[in-house]
Length: 281
Image (cartoon, rainbow, N blue to C red; front, side):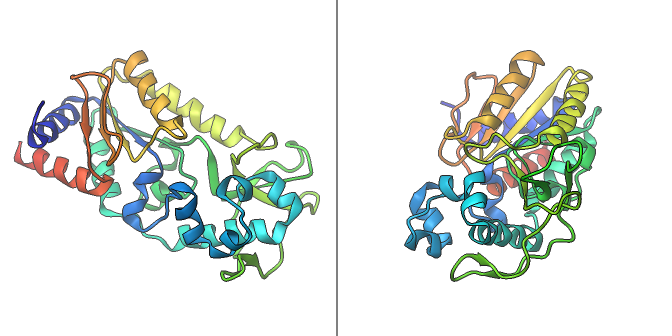
C-alpha cells in the first residue's frame, strides 16, 4: 500500500496533468468552515435542542410536510441555517480549489449537494456551479404553479429566529405572485413539489462543459455513501469522460482503482497537503 506522502504526490500529479478540474463536494466540505453536517441523529439534536426535546429528527423537519404542519417551526430551522450560511466565511480550501481550477486549460466546474451557497461566496463563477439539491438562498411557492411563481432569490428575507425554541419570530416569507407560503428551493425528504428548473439549467451548463474536456480530474470532498448523489456524479465523470478521481474523505476514502487517489483526511487538511505538493513539484 502506498504511503500517505506518495498518495498526496499522486493527487498533485493528477491535478497538474488535468485539462479541467471538477470539484464534487458533499457536507464534509463545510465542516472546516464551522458548518454542521448533521452526522447522525444525536449530532443533529445537539445542534437543535428544541427539536431534540420534541423528538423531531432531520428527516422530519427537512420535509415539505413540516411547512404544512408548522411553518414557524420549519422556518425556524431553515431560517437559522440561512442566517448561519450568510454569516459563514468559506475556509481556505475553497480558494485553493478555485486557484487550481483557473490554472487548468479548460477551467473548472463544481457539483455539490450542499445548499449553503459557499462556493459562490468563495468567488467561484456562478455559471460553473451545479447545486443538485438546490439552494437555501432561493425560495419557491408552496401553492402556485411554476409559471406564475417560479423561483426567486431569498435576499429580501431576513429571518429572526428564537433559537431556544427553533421558531421564526418575524413574518413568514410569501410568494410575490400569489401571497402563498414560500419554502426553500431545496430538495427535501419526501419532496414531490421541489421546482428543479434552476438546478436543471445548472446541470445543462455543466454537461456542456464536460463535453469539452478530455482529461478531467474530480476532486471529491466530504461526500459519504449515506446520500450518494455526489459519489454517483464522481463515478460518472470517471467512467464517461475518461476522468480520474481524488477522493478526500476522513472516514470513507476508498477508491475503485489504483489510478485514482483516496486520502483519509478532512477537506482542508487534504487540500493544503496537495497544495504543498504542487508547489514543491
